[in-house]
Image (tube, rainbow, N blue to C red; front, side):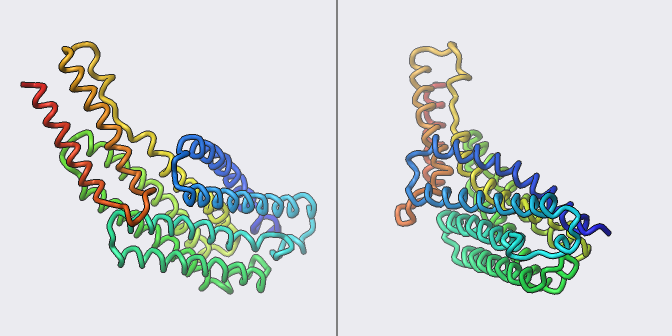
Amino acid sequence: MNPAQIAHGPFLVGVAINIFLYGIMVTQMYLYYSSYKSDHFWMKFFVGFLFLADTINTLFDFVYIYQALVNHFGDSLWLTTANWGKLFATDPVMTGLIGGSVQLFFAWRIYVLTKNPLVVSAVVLLSVAGFLGSVGTTIGVRMVPAFVQFQKFEVIVIIWLACAACADIIITTALVLHLRSQKSGFSATDDVIDRVIRLTMQTGLVTSLCAAVDLVIYLTITSGLHLLFNVPLAKLYTNSLMSSLNARGGWKYNNTSQTGNRGTNTQQGTLQRQSIMRPEVFVHVEEHELVDGDKVHDLFGSLKAHSEVSSHHSKDNAV
């Protein structure tokens, strides 16, 4: 088989997907910094750190594939190896760093919501183990630079990708179960919670499934086909985080557009109070993520209380 087909074909496709997702990340960054200026400094710094790491990862991957397919076109000996000089070995550790950082953020979110030390500890341990596995994979690539011999360090790759997938599954399950338990029976409140659940499941499923498929292909196919899923993995993590942060602006509810001009002055006053109350309530559904840990209270309890008040307003209006 042509040496370029062994690994560089899938790697090139992975880089193309990587750059596409990087473009989405740039858009998400712009939306975040322009829309959430009141977020804590540490949160803004964390997002900036992820963007910098994403940029370095994209640059290294692009430079490597350019060297392989342009500068060393037809050089079979060069194409059959991967080392630090070619920048290939930086991809596992960068992916592990980005993915682990995002998972630790979600571990903090679980702590704020549930105060469950067992779940949080499991996510932290798995994310740290995944990062260490990515470091070990980078060392393995350095020690065994031939693509066709990558299975020699498969144990450390299994640790990396299996821990990453398990952490994503635990994060998704914990958040979904907690959110489902907070439903109040008030339709507007439950609709917002359902939207949060859908977003949580979608983002968690994408990263865990990609890591699992990457691992399965790596273990079953000796070529570099798994790179098609491994290279874009870092961008999937950052985009999942940014999607969660930026989606807060879409969870506000306003009932004013549904009322038209049918009501009396009293009805309009009641609806105005509801429309003022509801945006405040629904912002709190997700803004629990961004408050300090020692100031966190049961925001979902407050959500239920506000729902009951809104319900009483509606009953008074009917009377």
